[in-house]
Length: 208
Image 1: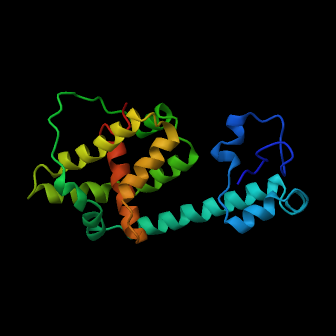
Image 2: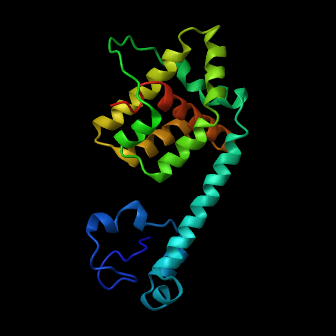
């Protein structure tokens, strides 16, 4: 739902906003259908759910989600990482002739125009990057091409999305969905995200 109304005559409509600003993530809030109707009602919505209250509700919810993610990352271990990377067994490592110069995560954030929500996921994920690195090193003892297969799988999706024209937070969100692969348990989902963030830090994913 739109925090500041979608069109003239809608609740909380702001004529000074551009269409891009109006449809930007910052002006959107996820709601069920019932609540959507309530806040969009011109009389009740504007009275009971002014802009400031909706922004506060959104901010509070996002804070709770970030905390839940941080708690879930604490549960990520080798079993979860193994589950999250099983899919790469079918990936063949690429023989790339390119030599990428790695750049720091903070520079990647700016270069890819990633916002606060993407930054929050990356920051939390970096807290377990050492564990992901230890897991990858452990597996590579018996499967030497495991790191390259892992990287190739993520890079293939990364370049596919770029070819579709995806950029910024939209690109990062889609990569997160790819990393989580429909997992149901939060520990599995967090493990997938932690692998993505590890690659964000350590290889050419998001270098372009």
